Amino acid sequence: AQKVTQAQTEISVVEKEDVTLDCVYETRDTTYYLFWYKQPPSGELVFLIRRNSFDEQNEISGRYSWNFQKSTSSFNFTITASQVVDSAVYFCALRGRDDKIIFGKGTRLHILP
Amino acid sequence: DTGVSQDPRHKITKRGQNVTFRCDPISEHNRLYWYRQTLGQGPEFLTYFQNEAQLEKSRLLSDRFSAERPKGSFSTLEIQRTEQGDSAMYLCASSSSFGGFPEAFFGQGTRLTVV
Figure 1: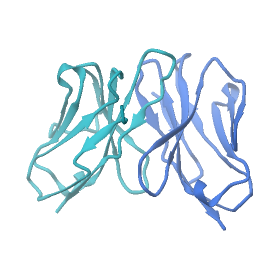
Figure 2: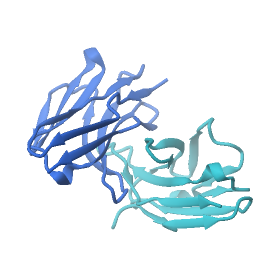
Figure 3: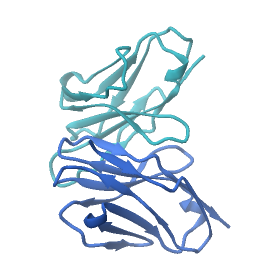
Figure 4: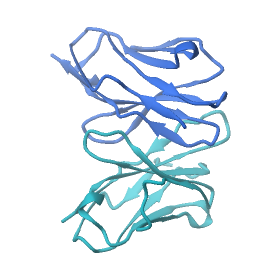
């Protein structure tokens, strides 16, 4: 069975601080994808980043970076120099070989001015 | 193409009534997903389609729920004899199983309130 766990329910940081959101996943598949989505107060889920199981290279895209470690089944997401507009709920998701996408329960991020 | 669209955006219904929601996916996407989201929770998988074929239905879904995707284009989700516990946001998403872009794109959702 596949599972995504986001242990952090809620995080508050002051604007311009860096913040890391944790994600741990479980799957028996050798081929899979991991994603991060953002859900702002408006409610629509917005795709942010993806990583496939064969590529453990960590990347940076603007203020976003992610750390994928298969050895610990973790896919953490970092926002650098946070801004108030980053306030939202962030979801980690897993897509396995059957193409079903499952989500974690989310981390609510508050960026305080 | 303007993305995934869902209709209606809001629905208020009396307990016991039937409701139907529609989802129009991104046109070239062959996968279509339905999720339910309640306050403070992540999207909960309900069912998904590849073209017109329904591949899996969540065991959490009662027989009152049914989904279709005729001709592999738009999809409908019907809830019969609604209950107050059905109140939630119903999300539709679509993706492609080709082209190296596996992420799903979501519509704005249909918020259902059962009174």
